[in-house]
Image 1 (tube, rainbow, N blue to C red):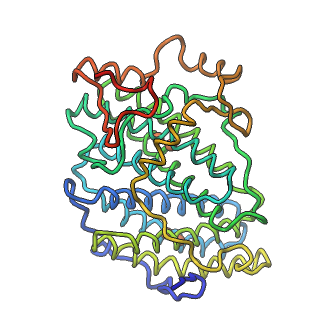
Image 2 (cartoon, rainbow, N blue to C red):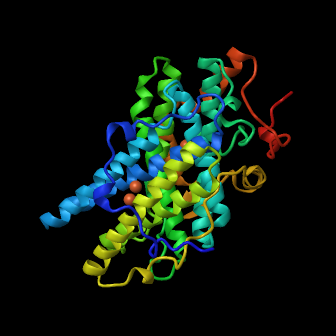
Image 3 (cartoon, protein in one colour):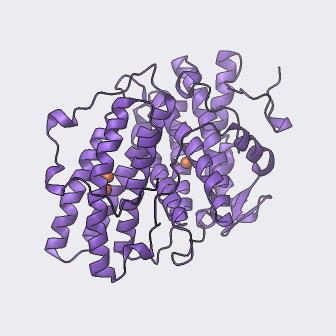
Length: 400
Ligand SMILES: [Fe+2]
Ligand SMILES: [Fe+2]
Ligand SMILES: [Fe+2]
Ligand SMILES: [Fe+2]
């Protein structure tokens, strides 16, 4: 059965405001929840945050008071949705535990999107980026063992492996080389637009999270690691946002945002294992259907086109959190030494890359390297979670 969100009726906007009791959601359990439920919560928090920020940007370009008021009304609901979603996270988790979950999202969501992406240039961009967040997970997992004396498998379970990807210190590229070419809004598949919006939003939330929580740590190595990886998330936002065609009108962008919210809530409703969380996805889907209807009206009025001309005829197959271990191992074995040059990829370090490396390192080792050395010294061994055998790259295998 296909689901066409443009044909469905949602909750009227004037019935969407929730009171304190309704907003006071019960968080998931800190120890026994499905890790992928946590991943879906983190993803939707990123999506709702982008909905709020995008609407603010649009409003700042809007002269018409009535239009601004309509945007403000919908945006207030997006802000309530963001609160309801993010408050599903349990308060007892440490910042570092949430960080490890953020990187698990980046790994398994980006890998899934890369597997499903039909456009080869866009697919390449996801494959390139996922090997970096994969390495961040390994660096943070070592910090976690060192300062909290716990193992990351408590958080990621056995679903996502933890081992080196493309080494984090090599992610510091000249910003010139972080800009990709956009898809063509007239020619690309509708699913490609949704993928780009989803990954851009997730990375943006990760960037915001690290820039705010990094300085809450006392340990110098923790503070430094958050600075380093926080800067790489800035590079990732630049990388992914540049995939979106900037020729889309504001109304087309709004339409794509609301459609993507419908797509993701529908996907997560179909795949959610926790019934209480599933009920939130279902409620929010019914709110988004109305947001989409309103955005479609604005699009018709101000853009002069029909939404069917830019959107998919029905929702694509659901976005699914599932292990991507074999796929990631294959990427590690073949693409670990890539960097970017202009809007493409190369396997050797070039002049601009070397200059940036020199400027950022200042003759010292990066925090991401020191955290592994420090943990080896303190715990006897670095932390890894290799469930499928030894590391696929010989030089990155752990001596035993
Ligand atoms: Fe929303
Ligand atoms: Fe990351
Ligand atoms: Fe990232
Ligand atoms: Fe929305």
